Length: 236
Image 1 (cartoon, rainbow, N blue to C red):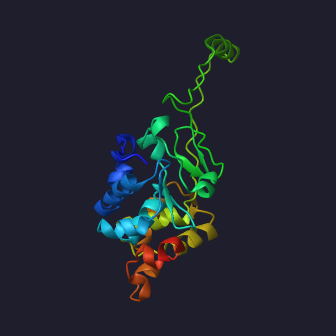
Image 2 (tube, one colour):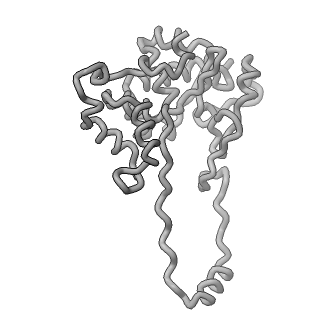
Image 3 (cartoon, rainbow, N blue to C red):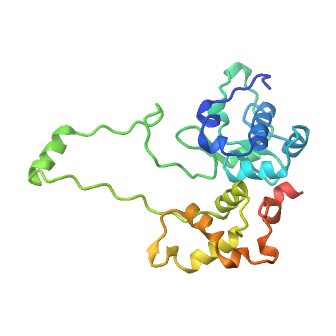
């Protein structure tokens, strides 16, 4: 296994990364230094303890999509291929062949579970957006009487996953119950009043004001990810 590791600013110099707690950021770098040549880390909990971090930091990295945990106890760093490039003569395959067989990569090289692929086109040198046929485009405009172009459609709202709500609540130390938040809006068809929801994070912040979240009982206690019980992997 190589003794030198690299980190890309494309990953670590983003608002999404820097908005995490300092301990979660530090743990990401420690995990990166201990990854094998395929990005697998065999003892993530031990590394967290040695680095002065905790299981909540591991959960946050998993919820944010920076690591992928497996039932065997290992994790893999999702952006490993973006951070590191190894010469073939220095590469040693991971011993976690079964876990590796569960992974695929998107067009940017990020590791993913299953066969999910990002469909967004980009111009980063991996998948180029096809050029338009200008002649065909001009003929189309003539046939339509040079009408004004149709404005682009608004981005379609996608309901958040439980892990996304948990990560948002954890970062803001909010008293909102993530599962309760999702259940409430699913029952309403993700409507705010009679209007389709556009920003679930804003709705989650607004939910903190509701009496049902803030009355003086056990729900008023600010929860941590230890209360969620969604990552038994980190509780073993």
